[in-house]
Image (cartoon, rainbow, N blue to C red; front, top):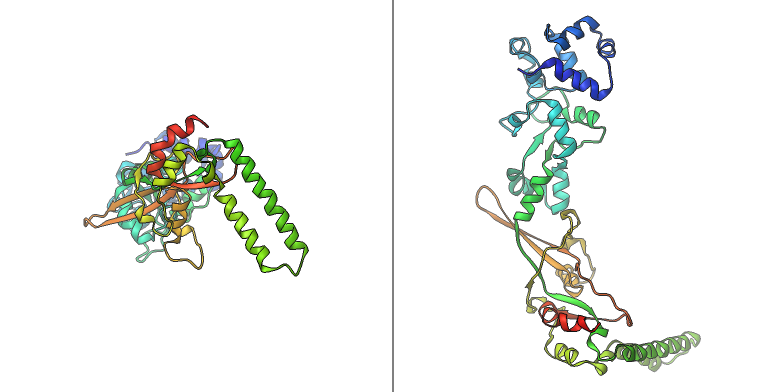
Length: 365
């Protein structure tokens, strides 16, 4: 049996209330409240229910066994968190449950669905069996299991909106996800074009010279509404030459890289995936491919976007109680993104090539 008086005192202290205020609110004599706190008297059924509703507690655990027979007809409202449905046997009081809801069990099933971009049924199969959780009945399901809406009780005590009935341990969820990682790989790397040239300043001068020519021609075109088509063709050619002008000033390493580097955005599977370290990015920040939409392109456009921007791919593998496997793929941005110093032009190379030449290229930067 729980120490009823001590538990009531604890909640009153948290709420900064006196036993007199509690008595006045409930319409119970202050002398009776005093006896309950001292443990010299146990509330009768009617007063026990009042106290339980006022404090937002778990009646079956809070009141002595000899009074359970009087509460038998209210057993549905007393059985708040059923051990048969959840691991409630580890939590013996409602205050403990509220504490966990405010500290460790802060992830709702809806949150997990959003993080993993998965329907509730999928989460029920592959996630919930592996994490500790708290269930808050609201009396709205078939059979009306409880009379008290325990979601509302928890919301009042925690001072926040609680829409979901099932709340999971954030630590358990994070550990499950990290333990489900099948691979962390990378196919490509975006590097500044200036890393491939022998003389970066000379490259910058040539690149800027193209910029001046492009700006002058664009101004000329805009000023003449009867501009001939050849001028537009000339402008496009200047921009093309500017993009590849680094090829005329390649260093020995740059020449070797471009000679062996074969990367095609249209055929990403032809580029080897290289294992890399997992970046320190919260799971909630991982990007699901369907979040990237490029209208007018094929279904794989999301994967192409990550490919041509050098993202890291994280593949997760899950298994349900029947031994069925499911996989999910997420992406995170390159944790070691390289930025230009002289020229804002980038080249896409394979991660394999980058790892081979990275030390030599960066040593002369």
